[in-house]
Image (cartoon, rainbow, N blue to C red; front, side, top):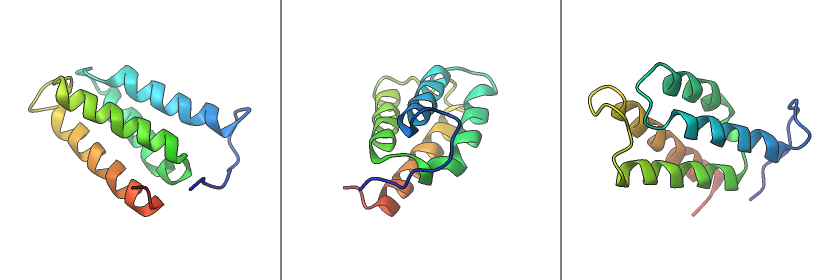
Length: 97
């Protein structure tokens, strides 16, 4: 189910979703402050993203888990696992199957 458009400084809403996905992909496996910073910026905007954007983010989380790309298992992995759960909650709110 498509989401309503919102006022963003991009030509199209798809551009914003793509930027979020690229930012998250940049952070995968990084053992710095950047993953938590990017997730914190995107988190309140999750309801504004499209079904497609959310699905891609979930696929990327699945990829990270399968190939153990979370970064440090004690420091980075818990943040990514929490992020994946937050995406699943948002997916449920959106009525995605």
